[in-house]
Length: 516
Image (cartoon, rainbow, N blue to C red; front, side):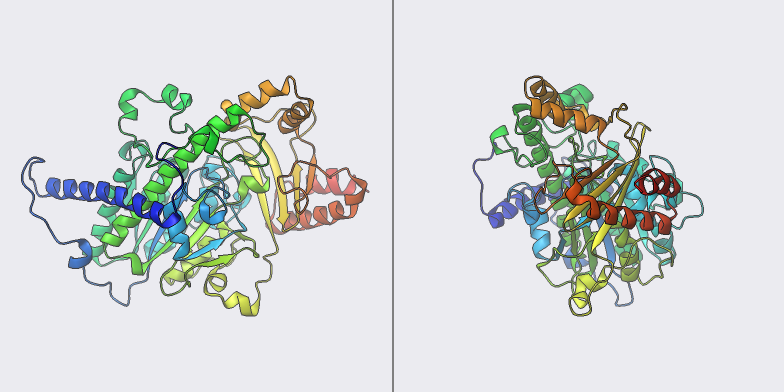
């Protein structure tokens, strides 16, 4: 870590916010000068902050909505979810002002389908967006409902991950080329300010989806980064406010502690810090605009980190997401839910309720408001004792069909693609971590078995998370787990029938009936 040893969270948050505030202020002054036709070298007259000149929003306006997605951040990385206290100080501070969901999952662990599921409230096989293709024409979108309610709509980053772009009715749309390759906190804040200004002048609420490109590969300081971008492109990329060394890398239990693994994890953590810097920049701009108290903020990751046994799979670490929500006046500060399983599919009906619009009746998500307010503590939250996740295809269009059912103790996965011959492949096996695992496997029998299993899997996987939280011992063929396996098969098939999964009959024939 280039910025010395760990500091208390409060000091880290203050330092991070101070650095970002300086950058945001500079960006705002630059924008102000440009809009008034002045020269960058002309003397500037200080102006009041936005919070001082903007009137409070009319009581009749619904709340603004700020949706912030982290790109490939593991749920275990943020300090508020058990990670290091110096990687995501801004997110940790936001968590203290709102609520954390420790059993939150995305329905599918890959970028575009995960975002499409959020914006439709439907599993990919119901929305049509099973890969990097478009949502079906007849599927309602969250932006449709908010637009009709009078919301200004905006998106920053990952524009092509919601396809077709024209269907989403964006009033503001900026992609990575306008945002320092999606890695410039200052550019994000500058663009967000434009929507904040317009919303204030038109006296309309806004919905802004901010998609950070961090910590997606290529990681900060990596050889892959240097090979991917030109020096001119990298000049537009901001340096994280803190970076980390191999010794400071947190190695999750599903990976082996190897030098190459640590190298990439340190780079990943540095990229996570820059994602947190971007969150800090946007929240600072929101506060300066005087909009914090009337804005619902939701932060989550689209999937797990891009390492073996995580992203583009159906393990718990593949789909578990660090969901944080702040809703002033509605959500008590510092709430944490570690008991109920929730999904980012639930954000669609939740945000509809916040905006005062009726959500479609046949969504796969359910309103989170009772959990947010604490009403579920008194009346219960039926149906939140497990979560179902899927996988269809990689960003390169290769199909690797998977289905999974996770609960507090058991994790069950059906790998429809696994036939003992075909090898799994995705970008998470292109880096130093995977290369280190392959090299070490040449002289380590246990690691060789682990590498081979990752590539070819088994048709079914079953893990007892109470004894094996990192899912390293497959119990699907263990006699002692036969009854549990039967139960999980039944639960999974019932879900597949209920949602119209196109593989439900294949699953019935090849798994349930063949088992006798």
